[in-house]
Image (cartoon, rainbow, N blue to C red):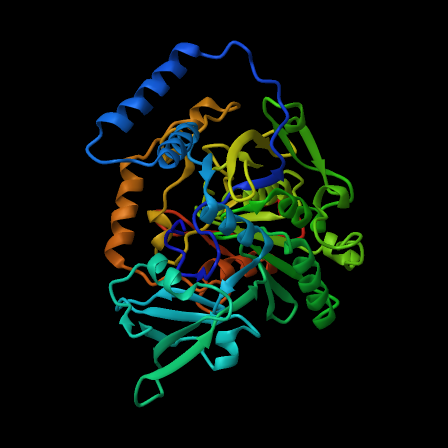
Amino acid sequence: MGKLKNTGLISLGVIAGVAASLQFSAMAQKQVDPALPLEELRQLADVFGLIKSDYVEPIEDKKLLTDAISGMVASLDPHSAYLDKVAYAELREDSQGKFVGLGIEIGLSEDGYIKIVSPIEDSPAYRAGIKAGDLITRLDGTPVKGLSLDESIKKMRGEPGTKVSLTIARKDAPKPLVFVITREEIHQKSVKAKMVEPGYAWLRVAQFQEPTVDDLAAKITELYKQDPHLKGLVLDLRNDPGGMLQGAIGVSAAFLPKDVAIVTTNGQLPESKQIFYGRAEYYALRSEGDALAKLPTEVKKVPMVVLVNTGSASASEIVAGALQDYKRAIILGSQTFGKGSVQTIRQLTADTAVKLTTARYYTPKGRSIQAKGIVPDLLVDENADGDGLNSLRTREADLEKHLSNDRDKEAAKNIRDEAEDELRIVAAEKRRKPLEYGSKDDFQLTQALNHLKGFPVQLAKAEPKIVQVNDPKKPDEKK
């Protein structure tokens, strides 16, 4: 399982890292070129034979060949990979929004323990009485201090029906509490929503999965039941690493005029040269019919701000780019990750597959996001005095062998000037706590609400600068 850098929130079972804009398909039935590089294939066979005969200890044929496949695919770009049985199973679980575990969102506390951010509703952990703020000090009697999040996650996952013991430190408990919890399949919601102030709603998409469009429609409906006359909506895509392409199309379509183009793709295969529109045929995956068909019509017009940061990647950049191109929303935060490519899953066997980059994607106006990202309309730091942990994140352009930006060659270069390095050093020295999105201490959310109300917004500058937006209903008119 990969590592989701600096989020502070990890859902057990979620594949971390920068997720792909994924499409699933059977192995392409493509005619093999008869002019194979026979000399190189002979060399491969010779090396295989040398390892089998001369290496210091015996190596299984399967391992050698599997590693050769893995190395060949991994040499292409950072997002292409060979998926063995474990990796392929995790990817399918992640895209379906379900996994086997306890049902908790966790983060590392300052003193090295595992902090419970939130139990997932109706999960084993929730029913056992695990609470937000609890600290896990031991797993099956083993101290967790010093373990990485990935190592802790592996210990908490397992087969359905098996048990795990959690030793919990709770503020108001005089001594540690021990919970024995039975693992089961967890159905995770990728969308959260709440009214943050009267008339103003917060809607967060944590990752784009198969249920995302259905979940989004349900949350929007709930918000409008609470307040049929919303004055403003904040769509939070910070640290959303991407996921299903169809989810990005559906989320965009919920707020845009009917049938508009959301994203275009281009690659070698004819099927990769496409325009995707905001219609159910392009985003419906799970539900019968169109999950967005019964949404309140007001959602197409409510003033919007989209929150993004360096952790917003791939599918989340598709949404931000589409809403920005159509001037449907103001984009607020920091420049996004810059992953403008689509990965297709080609199944090899029942248990293995190849994740292969098959296309670049472009916003409705033809902008390429690859190695550049979405530049917000309003650049706002994570905190009032700087960009915090967000300054420490890696971007697509920092990755070795990343694809170039075919429409903006300069944007593909990895340029990090002294000012940016200085910001990273400052952020590291401050050792800030990971931010809980949607909380009362969420500075960027506060600035988004200020914009929607027409109040001043504090921009990200060496010297904090205030921008006044005259009319939040016209986000393209600002100064």
